[in-house]
Amino acid sequence: MSDEQEQRLQKAAALRERGIDPYGGRFERTLSFHAIQENYREHPLIPAPVHAVAGRMIALRRFGKAAFAHLQDISGRLQVYFKRDTLGPEGFDLFEHLDVGDHIGAEGILFRTKTQELTLAVQHLTLLAKALRPLPEKWHGLTDIALRYRMRYVDLIVNPEVRAVFIQRSRIIDTLRRLLQTHQFLEVETPMMHPIAGGAAARPFITHHNAMGRDLYLRIAPELYLKRLMVGGLERVFEINRNFRNEGVSTVHHPEFTMLEFYMAYANYVDMMSLTETLISEVAQQVLGHMQWEDQGRRIDLTPPWQRISYLAAIAQHYQVDPSDLSDAGKVSKILAHAGLSPPRDQALYQQVNLLFEAGVEPQLSGPVFVCDYPTAISPLAKRQPGHLELTERFELYIAGREIANGFSELNDPVDQRERFEAQAKKHALGDLECHAVDEDYLCALEYGMPPAAGCGIGIDRLVMLLSGQASIRDVILFPQMKPVSGAPADAEAEI
Image (cartoon, rainbow, N blue to C red; front, top):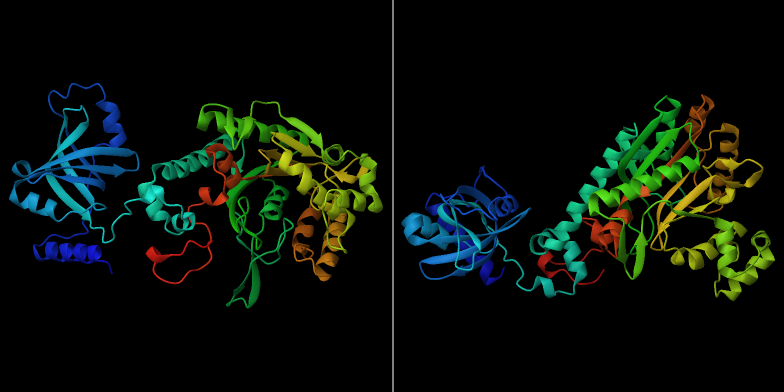
């Protein structure tokens, strides 16, 4: 324990001896700090307005029998003024036991200083919570990003721009929800623990239910349950919730992430592209107030309509080959070698082609652009294209080189779906942990008849990254997963 922590503990003990609880209760505020600043920006302050405010003290300047401090709430900051003659001996004695970081309630009158700063002259003071640890004095200058992620609660206190990102995140999600509801979509909740992993190609987290005596899987995606609901007659559904994938961490990947998935009966992937375009462009306009900006050196313009290109054509164009070459294993091997890519020996042709896409095409997609018509081999839940059974009615949306959304016309043929599930199960048996077992219950649901439909999943974290200008997914997740470190939080190492 540091000397300053010891001093703060002693102050808390001294207050208790005086009958003052260092951790008070309810305090009724009249206005937020932002509202006060806005309401009295041009106000003459005659008569002087009386207000009750509360917040964390983040700066303090003492002048003997008087002091100025800045309080902070979620909306902003306000200067307050303490004076012994105004507070009285008991009130000023309480003030003498305060430190930067404490939560206080203050009642008093507003005035302007000689520099015209709006200030509250405190007439009555209440201690609401004593901070036993000091705030870091040079937090803004820290380069230890990992420590900021581990101690997000401190990061939020001292970095207003970090708070702004997460306030904006909330607005983005709220806007998406309202827009979907205006399109007659019903918000639903589906299970987080699944008896069979499925809904996407990814490695699952496994847990165990003791009472049932069975393993369960944290959900990779809600897709198969949402489509069960369409079988049941819920024609337009959406869910905003967490998915879990037991895979690597990067600037755009996190094992626990938020997805919006929405499904619309009697529609196809063309309809879903149009709706996705509308949703994202409208969110940008409502949250940011515009659709054009610079992002990491790229010019972003979300003004509809957005570009649409073929998956195979995009690969062929990037590597300057004929699209037919991508169905020839020998030619694909040569393209890979020329690009300096070395896939595993046993990798299937479709996986090699997808490696070409991910390594060369994807980073160049400034977008917004819909990449369409993916091969059936990498789209196990998408409907085949009539007359082109090797392709599906599927799209992925790319903006600023990142995949933002994935959608398709849903496969509702139970016979075709069974064949694809069984093919996936064979790959799983051969060691592919991203492929999964046959979901008999889902097939049973399809056999009752699912209407033609289209669905889409939008990565909320990546969308927030885009709209808030953040370079890492950890900057838009309040408490990102980190490698464990030994010692107290304040001594956390800088290792990620």
